[in-house]
Image (cartoon, rainbow, N blue to C red; front, side, top):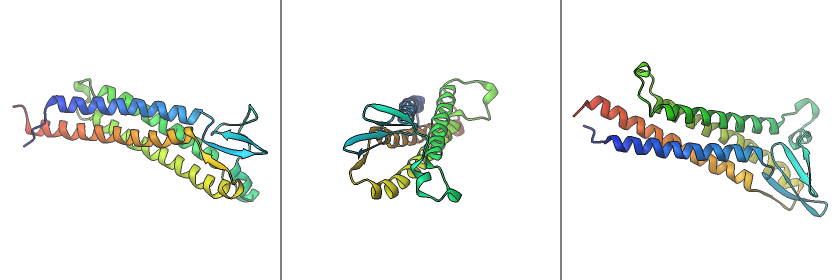
Length: 192
């Protein structure tokens, strides 16, 4: 027997939607900004993101990958592109989850067999997986290469936003899955 109220589902949907919107904003900001890492180069601090690096007040497009420099030409694996791709896929799947999550508030009879809460939760978990892959690739290559090359370096706020977005999109998925379970429990129990 389920004792969940309709307002409990609505609160979970709203909480999940709020987390998803904040998470998507953080994903976009993290992907677009140039502060994933800072290091000292020739006496001045340099910062870089996924698209550009900035030195002495000037920014340049990121054309040469540090990952390309560390492997022979025959065995190049551009980790910049992998990180970029996974961050973009994460933001896109989070956005798709937001649209599906908004539709879960609407009750169209044409979608009776298609549970939008469940689908939104899955989309947020997929977004979490993509951002986890992006952060793992970037962290692994950066720590293993730059940690040895530069003595004075650190991850910066854009990178940290990526990890925060990972947590927030994960919780959005949890909220939507809980809302789905509550809704299914009420549906199986029938009207009171």
